[in-house]
Length: 297
Image 1 (tube, rainbow, N blue to C red):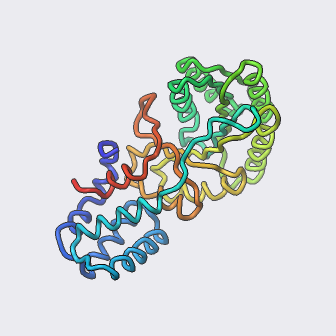
Image 2 (tube, rainbow, N blue to C red):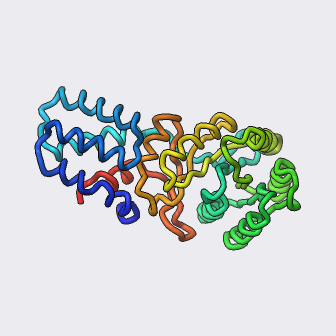
Image 3 (cartoon, one colour):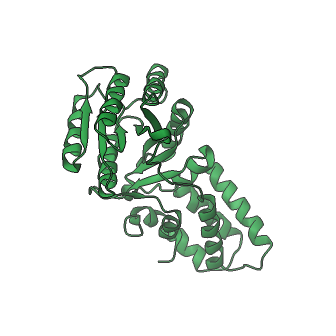
């Protein structure tokens, strides 16, 4: 994590060094605010973080920068403490379905492929469903991933009703004794009402017997920063998102979006992308993340 977050650390390293090298005064708090905003924690989340940290430290005898940063890290780890367990097993013996949603270009199809690799490595039988029927390349890309991972694959004709493809995939998974269905959906703008309603329909159909929606994973490109927050809000309202997959974290200077997502929406980041490799989509570990971003050199 430390190696992969070099870009994000580089953006704030000067201010980190400035805080670490001195005692706490007015300028220290200003540097801390600038540091958090630069890291894309967001203005509201930054003010809240700093206010709470001030209150904590005012009740102690902390006076040096290194102690301040340790207290910041402890607070941030606590803020990110939540259940991030991915649900592999549906209730009543139904087929668990993971829906991947998000706007165009954030890496949904690749994230499904890498998730399929993860689950296959765990010994699970995976079926991938090409629910993005509007972009032929998406189905071809997912088929390549399925072949690479040894997963089963279901697609429909180009332009077919995405809900019908997902339904067929769940039926196939049940008949083939699959453990989980990973379903792609067409990228859509979060402000297009008709497309969001279609996505809500996909979710309802995926939840029909013998399937059960176990995860709705919103894929966000970390390099988009705060723009990802408005996306997340609309998707969460439409399809009851259960967690976030944050892609391209290694290429972003805006890793602080993790805190904004959790504070504003109560959504846990469950998986993060840290590279191009098949196994570079990993479980999000708040402690490792905070240490990599704000820890000592």
